[in-house]
Image (cartoon, rainbow over all chains, first blue to last red; front, side, top):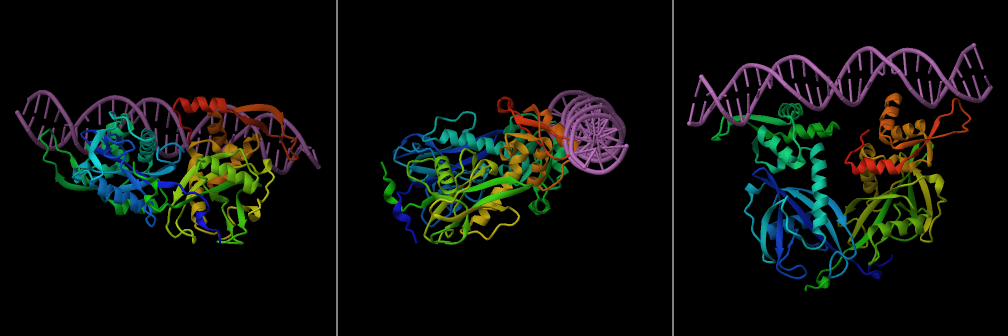
Length: 229
Length: 229
DNA sequence: GCAAAAGTGTTACAAATACACCCATGC
DNA sequence: GCATGGGTGTATTTGTAACACTTTTGC
């Protein structure tokens, strides 16, 4: 049986594009590197794949140790391979993207970073490596994904109102949705449970609170239906 | 600057899922391995990534040397990472899928294979490694992709008829399309050029021949429109 | 009671679907 | 001329988009 060591092997990293939502803005969690290459430069939180771990395990490990975030929606984005993308040599990047509710986590920089911080996706600094390109790919993915799968809920609190969900979709897709029609589209999916408790907002009429009903959603998926906004 | 050699590195292969279309059937090009592991077993044509080449270069090299196919539609599918997927050790597989017109190529097995052959996608043998799973992923991708981008043309001859295109879509998506409505959908995209020449088919009324107009299609894409069947 | 935001009913229009008909060819 | 498959016109149904109205709260 042929040996695996006949060829020089590339290094493999896992990089995470971490989306959050706060104050009607989508934001990305970036890390300021302490070490070369790209020391003192903002990059996506990433790290080398360990030899016995899966990508998802690596992504979760990196999220936890470098940013303090855990237990989030996570999905493979794309694998980036430009031969010159890392000055140290041949390094592949398996990129994942995550959806995080920023209120749920205390962000904290790991020891290998100067700082970890949320940035408005409309005002990102210039990133190290090819991470600008990776982010662009992730943004495109999020925009198309959100049309087909109700992943937007991952960015909100467990209990949320229709106006909040409506605003989230308008923010992600950067266009307006007729309020009435948006409500109808969402409600006819029958994947939301109304929780009669109302919000103590200090504004005008309080909005109804909902919870995402993952049981009903899974039934829907298993029947082969694909939600489309 | 940290060295890349502090960690053991995984091996990286590029595997190709090659779709063809012939006699109203979708087929896949498989390779019968000469060497262990999985000697005398059918697998996807794949090989190790060379240290200075991109995935796409590797995919094309493998296609040419192992199957005789070249110059085809090629797109990254997914990167597979199950730690036990290869008995030799930790091997990642960056999977690509290709669309090929089988009439255009003389298929020929490279020296490392017993045989290379087209298989009807409804009658595939049991494959080596985790290639059954990779194929399933590729089939799902093809089915959704074909709804949004007119990649189906890649599987047909340069000049083709509406009934041919219609049959291709019905085969890929495994459902029927109303003939009239399918014609209208395709024609209103305005990405087909009619070539007045007619086919010398031995059947009844000859069908109009068309060519794919990639210039018009690119204009459409650049305007931000997404075709939807 | 009035302003502001949340919730709901209904209409007008566009698009998908279904059906029908005509056309060109081989025998 | 008739059977067969190819091409095209149009009515019906469906679903989207737009608008209007009612409800609930704070001041």
